[in-house]
Amino acid sequence: MTLSRRRFLTAPTALAAGALLPSALITALAAQAAPPADLSDWEAVRAQFVLDPAYLHFASFFIASHPAPVREAIEGYRRAIDSNPFLVVEQGLFEDQAHNVPLQVKTEIAQYLGGRAEEVCLTPNTTTGLALVYHGLPLKPGDEVLCTTHDHYSHHESIRLATERTGASMRMIPLFADAAVASTDSLIAALLAGIGPNTRVVGLTWVHSSSGIRLPIREISAALRARSGAPLLLVVDGVHGLGSTDETVASMGADYFCAGTHKWMFAPRGTGLVWASAENWARLRPLIPSFSDFDQYTAWEKQTAIATPNNADRMSPGGFVAYDHQWATAAAFRMHRQMGKARVAARIRALNDQCKAGLAENPKVKMHTPMSGELSAGLVSFEVDGMKPAEVVKRLLTKNIIASTSPYAITYARLAPSLVNTPEQVDRAVRAVREISG
Ligand SMILES: Cc1ncc(COP(=O)(O)O)c(C=O)c1O
Image (cartoon, rainbow, N blue to C red; front, side):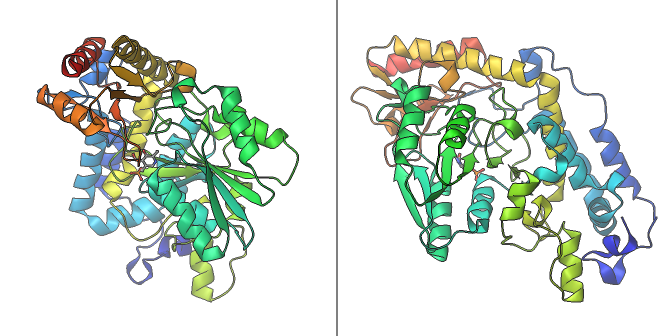
């Protein structure tokens, strides 16, 4: 990286090239490389969290409680930035590649996703990622974006706002009437039947936060590619699959994979990512000036056109951000790598299987999440006969059990067993639902 690279956005006061990193940043970086915590059993993992022990936490997917490695990383960077804001941020962002902290974060993320660092765009959350992708797509009047009636507000509204601007259209289809009895074949058939002659983009949600169904994205993507007709781009809202499912995201078949990392990944609140291949990044137009793409900056400086194709860094929203949080994202991904993706997914599946089996024995309960672990992940959605979902959640809270309702027009009660829970806690939650259902 050259002196002009280092001058990016800090030109009037930049240090000479080769200046030493501030010691506070070195300390924070060294802390990131410190020997990891013992995560060899689930009690050790649970001990990383400072959750209020007065409650059973079954809504952890909503927003993360930072585990110890993440809290320590945030604290290290916070101390470093507080001690020397200019030098730490300027050099953390614009120093040579070996010391570039966002690059280290993206390298760690890429390892987990099975992709490359340059394919990862850092965002503050899922919503921003979806908005960037849909607004970046080269949509034109007549093009259609197809999504489903089951997607999240953030997803639908990203499509609506983008299509309204470009003159393209948006259409939603149901993939099932009852998620609990859906199958891979029925999901694929419903989607293929919904594709119209003008469909250019398909938006799907990996794990639905309404019904808890987990779409078989790999199989769906293969079916989309195998069909005849105009090629389609597949955008996936992956937030509740990332960190709960044993998948290699970069080869799953999504063209654009958007996720917050502040839910199942336990990364700092206010962090997220979009993953796409270089070819797919090149299709998009950026929306917000980037602070991490040198070509964009120099083109602005020289008032010339940008000569290189669009890329993940150019899509990353610029402006200074909460670097102590963004940079500590690496610690969360390292923690997941240490726990093991397959091991984490198996634990989450076992707890959710237990929860579903227990609830299904209750004649007053209607399950909305498929019983199969192949079509679900960490969310269990259900209704209790004669009781509004909000009332179910309220009554569980009187027993110090934190459940949630799904934020959709048709809403369900949700229990989300995760790494912070134990099988004994799941039993208590199931018993509590039985008690309130009479
Ligand atoms: C399926 C789904 N997509 C998107 C979001 C929004 O996530 P974020 O807060 O990371 O933007 C949520 C929120 O929980 C969600 O359930």
